[in-house]
Length: 161
Image (cartoon, rainbow, N blue to C red; front, top):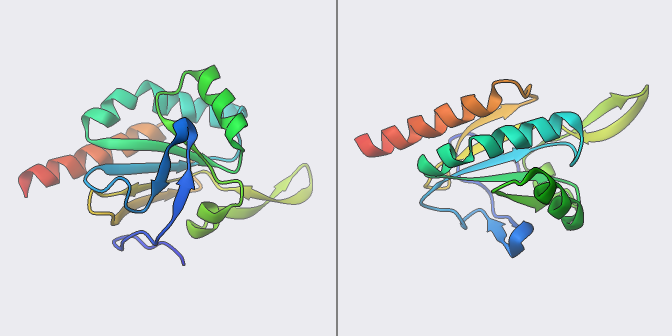
C-alpha cells in the first residue's frame, strides 16, 4: 500500500536501535520525522545524519520524534549511531518493507551499472498519524532546516486550533 499526503500512514512495524519498535501508531500525539537514506557511513548520509543530530534539540522542542531509516542492519546502525553520537534512533529496514511502502526504492546508475538504491527522502507525519509532507530525491544542504521549519509550523497550527 502506497503512502499519500493528507492520508493516514498504512500499518507498519519496524525495529529501531535502542530496542525500540516503531509503528504507524507508536508516535501518535507527536510529529514523526522519518528520513530515508541510502547507506550508513557514506559521505552524504553522514552529513545528513550530523545535521539532524545538530538540530535534534530543536526538533524535540517542537514536539517531533526523528528516525533515520535505511536497509542497513542493526549492527551497522549501532556503529553508525555511536560513531556520530546520534541522539535519535535508526530503523533497520533490512527487508525493505518500509522502503517499498514509502516508495523510496529506485533504480540508479552507479559506476555504469543499474542498481536498486534508496532515494534520499523525508516524510513528516502529524500528531494524528496523517502524512503531512514529503520531500523526495532531495539534496542534503538546507534540507534539515526546511524540515524543522515545517515541524514548527505544525506546532504553531496546533496551538492556534
